[in-house]
Amino acid sequence: MITRMSSLFLRTLREDPADAEVPSHRLLVRAGYVRRAAPGGYSWLPLGLRVLRNIERVVREEMDAIGAQEIQFPALLPKEPYEATGRWSEYGDTVFRLKDRKGADYLLGPTHEELFTLTVKGEYSSYKDYPVMLYQVQTKYRDEARPRAGVLRGREFVMKDSYSFDLDDEGLAASYQKHRDAYIKIFDRLGLDYAIVAATSGAMGGSASEEFLATAESGEDTYVRSTASGYAANVEAVVTPAPPARDLAGLPEAQVHHTPDTPTIETLVDFLNGAGMGREFTAADTLKNVLVKTRTPGEKEWTLLGVGVPGDREVDMKRLEAALEPAEVALVEEADFTANPFLVKGYIGPGALQANGIRFLVDPRIVTGTAWVTGADKSDHHVVDLVCGRDFTPDGTVEAAEVREGDASPDGQGTLVAARGIEIGHIFQLGRKYADAFELDALGPDAKPVRITMGSYGIGVSRLVAAIAEQHHDELGLVWPRAVTPADVHLVVAGKDDSVFEGGERIAAELSQRGVSVLFDDRTVSPGVKFADAELIGVPTIVVVGKGLAKGVVEVKDRASGERTEVDVDAVVEHLT
Ligand code: ATP
Ligand code: MG
Ligand code: MG
Ligand code: MG
Image (cartoon, rainbow, N blue to C red; front, side, top):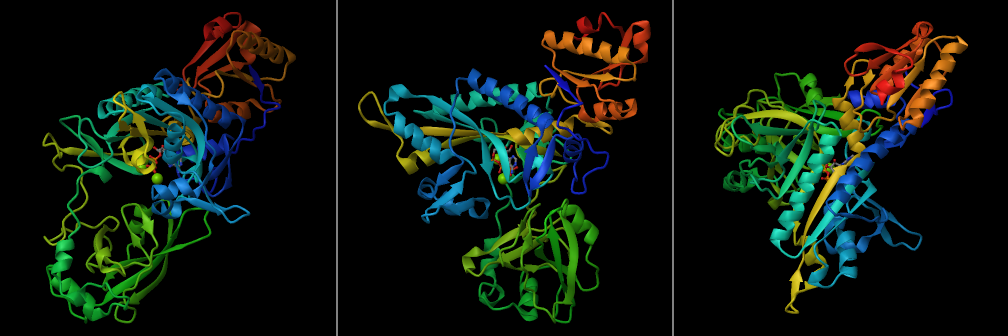
């Protein structure tokens, strides 16, 4: 196939888009692969769509290879199945909900366990029907709190989700293993560097859930791995000390803010002293209630956050910004605690924001660290981690909830090192949760019903475009791995003479005939523009037909290494195939 740049629907940009904070976002927009259509919603232009389709193809091939069968559900789904499993409400604000003209409730599917379970129940009834694995490649909808980084975290995105249905636990383990192996093949074929990490606590070795994290600085997930064993886990999954409900329970009633009343300086001071903060506080201590606002770049809406700071310190905006990056942070007001009771509109969790009208009491020595949170309901109290403490060492009442680099590995072997990654796949042994909800049984050989056990397995197909771009780029542009590149060869005509254009045409036609797809820069713009675009677009092989043609040679450049070779024009097609 020959794609002519003279007519290709493509405009590259010389400037970085203002809202792009990670390399993949910057480059995919600049190279004309995607365009923003809405917050967390992106349009795929011709080159981007090709990369997306290439990834889908690899995913489908490996899914088919393990015997999974492709089906397709609607994205617009009725409420009832999600109500049956409790997820209509559990999913909270993440679900896009809507009503039809008759007033019936619908949602846009964030994931499809319910529908797959119901469909299998509708078709299969005997133990002889099982096991079965089904999948789809489909658009999913999640109203993410912080859509970010282009297609990396969208509100509309493409996911491959598959589901396995087995008669017993051994069957589920086998289906899980098949998916795990397929995922390894997929991510290897896509040229990714990634780690497989435990995704649920206590999950070591044959775990019930694992994530595939593509190594990247820009990743939102942090994982730790042991220096001495194969142990690797998402930090979210590493067993952390339980929230000290105990400690709160031991405090006098008045100090636990479970009433709707506004807390006073006295109750805060009592609380802090009761919690053994290492020094005595008095009402004369100035405690600042700093209100900041944050928003994701490109968004209009701000989220208000409360932060506690000692009265004699400035709020460290730089540190807050770093922790909340890429969100913008701006100071709203600083007020004396005494004048402005400590009522905040949200809290900062590890990398997460929540605006839920919760109240919290903060150790006033730190901008950031650990806070005791009590909701309106007494039972609601729990501990949250605030952003990036100083070197604050908790004093016994509060235990560190975060694992750190250098900590002993939970399996007792070696110490932990930390790294960041992008979640590109997630495999899960669900067990019987959904089969129970919908009574999915198979009639056994003895005519007794057997409850089916399930697994679910996701891949972020559209996210992969960005994850691959994160790992495969340089300062000049993208550098696609062969498996996903939008073309095999980027053929540049550099010069004005008819002869170079004719030479280019001839090479393009021959390559195309041999099944090599060619992105052919037949435009009449300057060679400088063409070269810059070729680097930006990132096709792995660049062929330049220019001055050398007069002496019978063209230049072949390897985009990744930058290595250039002069090749005899008559041998170039052979050379490239
Ligand atoms: P994350 O932790 O990044 O929010 P998740 O754990 O919520 O992801 P899953 O429910 O496990 O996601 O979905 C399966 C896969 O779908 C993920 O591993 C990820 O690759 C992809 N994915 C999830 N959310 C998004 C999103 N908002 N945009 C793009 N891809 C996504
Ligand atoms: Mg999520
Ligand atoms: Mg996740
Ligand atoms: Mg996940």
